[in-house]
Structures are given as structure tokens and as C-alpha cells.
Amino acid sequence: MRKILILALGLLLFTNCSSSDDVQNNPNLPDYSFNTGTLINTSLPQYSQLKFPGNFITLSNPYGINGLVLYYLGGNNYTAFELSDPNHVLTDCSLLTVNGIIASCNCDDGNAYNIVNGYPEDGTNGGYALKPYFVEVSGSVIRVYNN
Image (tube, rainbow, N blue to C red; front, side):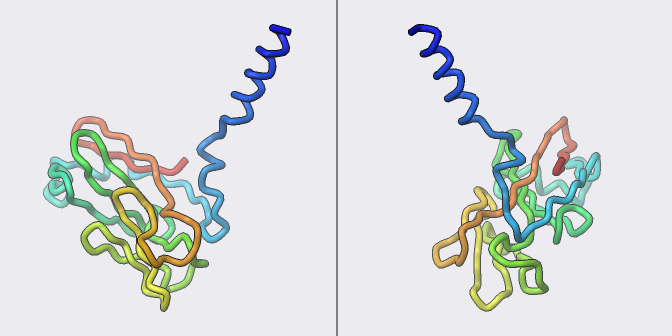
């Protein structure tokens, strides 16, 4: 009986684990690989605003599909998200524009997302949040990448 219980618990734990590859299974957004490397260095004037919480920068393609937004929360905490509306197929209007902490698309439905957490704002059509990217901080260099 004890062996069956241990086996059942192990199987339960195994089936509840998933890789980060399965988290964002969005048919609207392809999965491109990129890496900013040492490009974003807060010692440089063009990135120095990332030393202060509440600030962000945007980078255009080839970083992401339509680019990305990198937001500084404070400490070593940053968020990075794709600048394409996850609830639209890729079109000219699906490029997101950032104003404050809200990223909005230019399509007729006016979808909008919070760049702090990636969640859709009230009234946004569709079931997807913003596509997140990985962020790694090493001293004054911030690396954003997608496998």
C-alpha cells in the first residue's frame, strides 16, 4: 500500500509540472529566438532611466516580433513583454504602443495591456496576456532573451 501511495504522489507531481515552453501556446505569435546580450547597459545615457523604478524602454525588431518593452520594478526586478497584441494575428494594427504602464493596439477593438504584469485591461477582447520574455541582470547590464 505504501509503494502505491508513493507512486501515485510521484505521478501526480510529474503530471503537474510543465516547462516554460508550454506556458505561452499562442497561435497568433510565432516563437522567435533573440538575445540583447550586452546592448542594455544602464551606465549608458540611453538606458540610464532604467536605474529608476517605474521607467521603461522599448526596443524594436529584431528583439521580439514587433519589439519589446522592458519595465523596471525596482531592485533587480524587471519585466519584458512582446509589443504585439497577443489576441490578434500579426497585422499593422497589432503593434502595441506604450503610454505610461499601458500598451495599446491600434486595431478597432482597442485592446490594452499592463506592462508591469502583462495582463489585459478591462474590455480587452481575447484570452491571452502579453508574451513574456526572460530578463537577466548582471551589474549594470540587463539581458533580455527568448530561448
